[in-house]
Length: 405
Image (cartoon, rainbow, N blue to C red; front, side, top):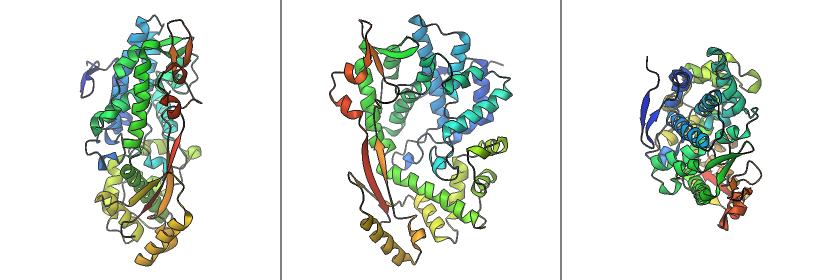
């Protein structure tokens, strides 16, 4: 059977699967689940084209990683066959632990277990199944491999993951500001003392990358409508879990019921839990919400109606913290309108904050390699004065409440 298949991708054109092991991992049911997990959560309620999946993104990342390996080898960076395959596996599986609608699960029905931790559990389970073939990939993914640049390619401030999702999300949303030139960036990659650097010629491409990331966060990922929709979804799952804990039987698929009925944390995330998590996707949540629209519980049915029919809460974004009395006035009004408790009203009237930091000076830096051999941070190397400003976090505060209030 020919396992070196070619896929047609709308972003890069033809993508070749680099090895039979990578093909077998793509064919595995754990990975195929990513076809049913939206890359951008609830963003399709704002950008109708944003229906692409984690599957698209992971395949795109493998394609970019192939380009990286070719560029670095051309520049005489020694990468063995085993390291090459490990890089492909690590980037292919870096997001395999995402739950339905990407981030909503982490904040609602799975307690404090991040998608990175679940990705690692999937990788370890696959490693057993594939007789230890993923050992080196796991080492790189965990940051335990001595060649630091390999981790930087998978998880850093200018990594293959970001290079793909910015370009891909820009394409599917139609937000042109996020379109980065991934190929140009990768061509400028080099390695010095086992650390990833960008050659001096690529400094403007890096500036564009950082600015594109900032614009995509404000315009797309933290768009106020996407934000309110995701908050509603988190609250739907929280309310469903709360009712289930009180003994209310809710109509839901077997895997979703399991996560509603059990308190899942890092300590009890075992093989059974992982296999049930592997059956959970966007369709479980959407079909459950459609069923819950007719539920007798005011909170659950109204939250589900809001998402399914896109009649969302009103959201106000401010640069200053929301005053407590403003929130309480809206809560009191909504309680009076619908004759519900303060706890129930808190599902519809709430506040929070969002933060955007395009470039973090405290974590792995993006280092520029000058022709003289000098290495310095992009903020110092760039003549773009606003890059320093972009390294400061910008926080905005929001309040959500029903349009009838």
